[in-house]
Figure 1 (cartoon, rainbow, N blue to C red):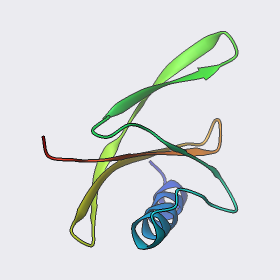
Figure 2: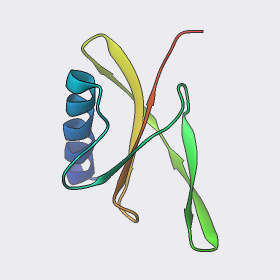
Figure 3: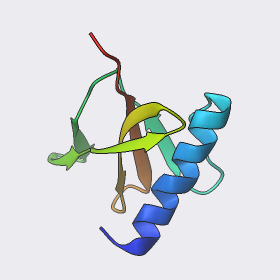
Figure 4: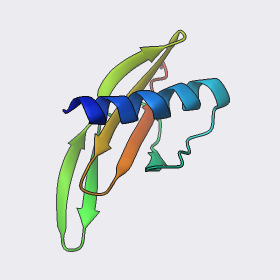
Length: 81
């Protein structure tokens, strides 16, 4: 993952943790159900697996990843079961 990808994820995560709102002016944001660590991104007839990484901010744990192909950040809050 590039430094630019990490900056995008950090920006989206900070906004999400502060506001609870999964939006961004520069990239698409998709909020997944809780505790998801992967997602199949469909592009036309093809699909690819997006693996989410664990991030910790303000006592919250969120799984997240960025797809440069679609310009989308995927978020999934980690909830203890």
